[in-house]
Image (spheres, rainbow, N blue to C red):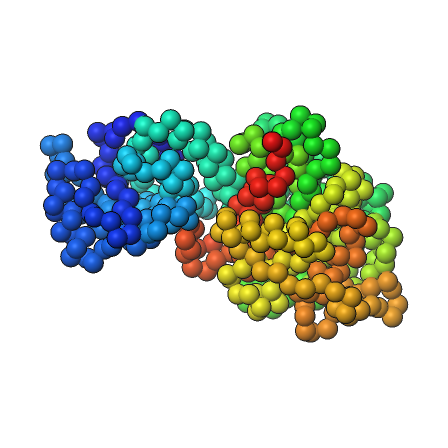
Length: 484
């Protein structure tokens, strides 16, 4: 589906859509205005966010479908949910072209309605060879009808964000036999056409750098590991030190020798959700020509249990020179991140580093699927992220880091072990990564294990990949890391 802009209502649309604010009079500018009002009253529709009234009526000498959609209190999130509700109703309805009557609607609100509609339209049918006729998408175009001069630019910005989210969802959805470290890199190469500078490290280069922790995770798989770095500088060199984003990219996680239980293991194709969010964010920044200097880094491995796999009890030497006793090979994400984070700091000299990872099941126990976990060594950065989460809808909840938890990682034989005790699992995982943050660097760790995949439809997504993280990071960069 695509979203179009028109100064006036197209006459060929099969469906007319009218946003209705909560508590406002239902009086759409159509011939069947009274009928629409009666239908709304009969269904006790009062403009609640995402509420719908559907009817067929004569308009312009033909019968068309009419949709009244509630926009609630008029917040941007309300408009997004309204747009998503429209798409959910019309995507497979047989309608090919629908138009939103935007006269009198604030242009920013209308753009967000389009954003919600486009996000909800995303689906992956790549591997379907049989699909019932009524399950096939039919909605090709949603037109936003408004003569607001600022709408085209507003929409171009929101469309860039939607494309970034779509790329993240695509990567997260792909199975492990299709998406692995090398193919992940290939899927990202088109970003170079948008002006993003790509750097790829292979196994040999990582070995020379001393990335023993990351390579230890990868050694049980025939799929070779990669580091992917993406630099976008939309400031023309005005911003020196970039904001650095680091994503965990375990393209499939069997647990290694510490093998996961069979039931549900198929879900571990999305254990690269952090890396997926980083790539999607970079695409959104480039498409909207963000005036920001950002580097996105993905540590890409597959964690498998073959005869060469890392064993519980092995000791690895990280790029930082610190040693790690690997007590559980299923606590692999932190081993990937510690080398990726250290390399990022040495290479790009950032003032701020944010890592994203589907790191711990303990985070899902703590927060369910409502918030990502936030850990940080800087209150200012933490508050910026919390605010960006509320603004974007990718919500976060902050957890503590402290020396008391850090002691739980001490090893009797190495500098540290890769797991702590059964309790405080998400915190000790964050404390592990913190040991690789260099002095003076502001750092935040986002544990997004409960957020990248959903077993039920949400506000702007269907079941499956959510694209979590892209909107959060994009909002943070808009608010705090963009040049004037």
